[in-house]
Length: 387
Image (cartoon, rainbow, N blue to C red):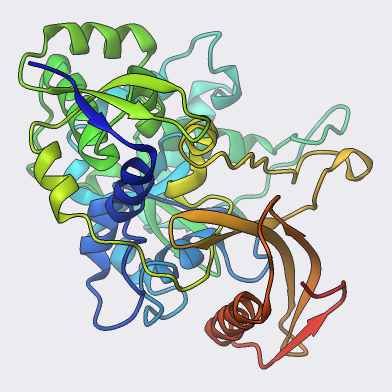
């Protein structure tokens, strides 16, 4: 089968549509449908304006209330675990997740930070207490860090809870004020969840990733879930005969060979032009999380600089990409003072060769107002030069 050629413009527009970012984010919403289509929603402790999971969902429909997703976790429509990072995933994926529980629960040199090194009787006592008392948070225990203080040092009970959580022995029952409450897995997982054979799990991870990518190379597929290794994806690709070969034009004019689902032609035909509403995206948004893919398709060089020393940052601590139609037009750093109800813009960087005329400035200010309203803020203060 001859390779289907996908232009750069088609690739960018299809990627945004596949990610739920093509339409104006208004109207009725189906929260579970959005999450199923994305595959996961990354969660993060930092609340610069609002936490990442809230922002990611709001970017797809601005009528979704802040923190609405936690009710879906509590009623077992979602489960929480580690993909490329901590994520919320549809509960119907739980059977496929067995290889991730086993991978992260295995005591190997590849993941020593998941292992407490604690006495197994101590771990069993923690689990037994949860079985007897019901969901407990780390605050229900009182062990202390011993020895030299280190940045990532955790008390023994927290190490034990993490170890059992990564292995799937414990699961997140719910969160309150972002505090995780652990329960034994049997109380969270569906009673008759089916765990397929490993080969079926590999096939599912590859196919479900490609479906949510619409097109890509083996590396894109591997990075999507962060569960498979390169060899597993390569072997899967070699065994497939019902995929469409494609060539994708990158932003710089180069061409990359890849694969796509067999309905790629229909997807391209159905793909609408993206809304021209200027959008503020979260640093952990699925559309930009794969920085290699982002740079190839959009020519947008984005680095999350939260853990970069301040003096070495090119931009700022928590910087939001600005998306307009199918291109990135700048980046902005915003903070929220919730006590005072103020959103502060502390940094703004336009992209090269992007002019910021009156129309684009008005579009940004309108989106800032919408974003502030979502976070319960009533004022916007510019602490840096406006565009």
